[in-house]
Amino acid sequence: MGINKQSPNRMSLGDFYLVAPDAILRYISNMKNQFTAVYKKRGRWYVGWVEEIPGVNTQGRTIKEVKDNLKEAVGLVLETNRLLAEKEFGKNISREPLVVSTP
Image 1 (cartoon, rainbow, N blue to C red):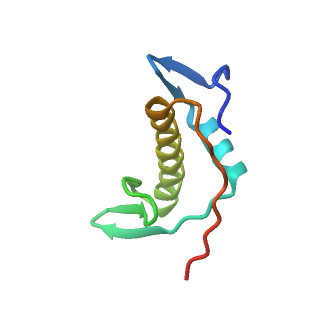
Image 2 (tube, rainbow, N blue to C red):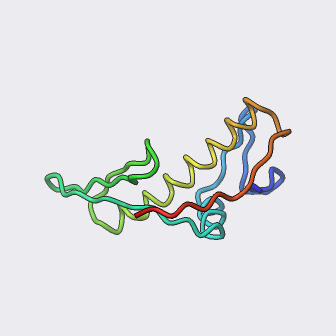
């Protein structure tokens, strides 16, 4: 499962594809993932990160801006991880949903 490479929301960059943020958010919203967002006020800015995914962090002047930025960052990280896995291992790999219950 992934975003169609022929989509007008994609732009080729060598072996990688850049995906428009709105396409990523639609794709992620269809997956119904849930993550833990953490927010902290630092001076006039808010910082935020997602506990479950290293590297997903952002900042903004408002909590709403940070939330929007985090949604985009999650999409970018997940899509990049998929692209890197395909590049590393090829398309001849198996994927399946993994459901995990956590406390």
